[in-house]
Image (tube, rainbow, N blue to C red):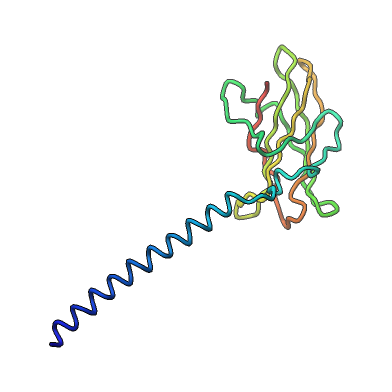
Length: 159
């Protein structure tokens, strides 16, 4: 009797584990979908954030992050300046130098990251109409509530 009772308990336990696993998977799926369907914009795409102090550059929504194209890569055209917290935000800028033979517009992707490399904000700066051989300043501000962040240029592309 105890042998058959033990088997029933094992079978019942296995069924409970399967039911519990299915329920947990369902909750995780619903949670993931709710996160994707959120109606509020992320900090990186919220309008009005990340204003530029330099008239020749303007921030774009994070959705405008260009995919990497090695033929348009221009990381060596950009020099980064300092990244220090100021009035709650992290202004970051530098200089873009058009080393090409034709006028170029640039898109600079900047990530604001923690010491453990977690990206807390992303901004895309558009720098239009840089004449061949000329240089111009660019700037952006992000991660308004961030503490102890680093500013990282992720990608630079010319159009």
